[in-house]
Amino acid sequence: MNDELARLIGFIDAGGMSRRGFLTRTAAFGATAALATGLVGGAAYAGEPKKGGILRMGVGGGESTDTLDPALAANKVTGAANRQWGDELVTMSPDGKVEPRLAESFESNADATQWSFKIREGVKFHDGSTMTADDVVATFKRHSDEKTKSGAAGIMKGIKDIKADGSTVIITTDGGNADLPYLLSDYHLIIQPKGGVDKPDAAIGTGPYKLKSAQAGVRYEFERNADDWDQKRGYYDGVEILVINDSTARNSALQAGQVDVINSVDPKVAKLLSKAPGAKVSAVAGRGHYVFIMHCDTAPFDNNDVRLALKYSIPRKELVDKILDGYGSLGNDIPINKAYPFFDEALKQRPYDLEKAAEHYKKSGHDGSPIELIVADTAFPGAVDAATLWQASCQKAGIPLTIKKVPDDGYWSDVWNVKPFCASYWEGRPVQDQMYSIAYLSTAEWNDTRFKNADFDKLLLEGRSELDPAKRKEIYAKMAEILWSEGGVIVPMFNDFIDAYSDKIDGWIEDPNFELMGGKVSHHTWFA
Image (cartoon, rainbow, N blue to C red; front, side, top):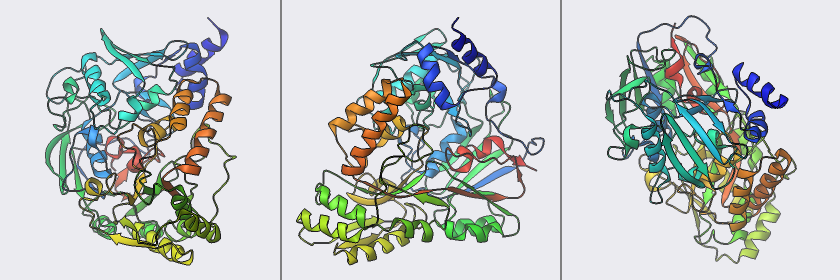
């Protein structure tokens, strides 16, 4: 055995591997990535876990049109609800490692064109049926079907074949894909009986809680799964998710003891809330970012000078200071920041330059008609205020930006990914390939800027199969430059994930992957 390979396997057996080490070594040597089941979850417990009680979560970002089909999960409420009942093959730990879940181990061949996932045996779905490799294959095929509307469609591109061989799932890709395990941690890819083809929204999975009732846009109720395959999670008797879209109402519900956990705390009140009796605030920097998105195929945004005029007119630092109150950092019109491996530090920061904004606007030849930006409070905390500040800035540059505020309910179904100019947010993804594949690949279902660039797509596929770290960084740098220069996304700021919870809750850890402890607050906390 190669000495480097032997050392690598020994390190994995000792407790895991960072993403960078995994990319540069595992795929190159075809080594097995297997972690001890006892390490899954990664919680640093403050005390001994206790069972009992109902965890009540006040979550903003839901609407009456929501579905529990994980393929169509498009907001924070559905994401939180699906994490109660479902599991993926693998997950991301708070320290950036890929951890097996329904796959107990995985390995690749030498050039990362074929991956084998050993499926955990004896796992039961909530309906009593046994999960098999065939269920995994059927799930992935549903998300990769050419007619799918799945949010994971972009990351499934490039998979040539998926098959079951006994208890192993074998995935063959068109080219090498060193990131595949990271991509399969996507929250849309919950494993369902027979792939969820017949009843995709039935919420039958292998998670720690079973669905009892669901009222979209209002309330979801779950009970503990007594037969959960992982007994090191799910300490509550049940979980209730109350949809509370108004930020002030969520804060009040926590302080009044009506809920135990809330998400998306407005940065402007986070410090004040942290001083409230019985409340704790958790702020974690990560890959989340607030955005304004323009459809590149719709006038006037099909004119790059209009897009550039808007990009130069947005007062980024003012938004970070006034909207985030320090709970975040400056954005640069790409969805990638220094939290990502292979980040290009050399990409110049786009300045706030009203003179240049005015030049691009004049060059665009726009007729001066109103440029309507649609916003709602649910888009991101402070979205309406951010839009108002931006509007004032645009007026100084002679850009006729107008603001249309709409109700929260229906925003994610009727505005986002539908209307040509609106506010939104992205929680980010573990790796650049996943973030770009989901939202910027020309054929991605969630390409919410309608950005279509053949060179960008080509580079994305090249980067996916490139195992040399230096070359891979060069590829991502070229992609960033294209998107920065021509894309339809305006990223003024990267946000911290700010949650708040009752001081009666123990076991809380900070997780930079998503809000609410990576979406698994109900998995790894308990009532003290």
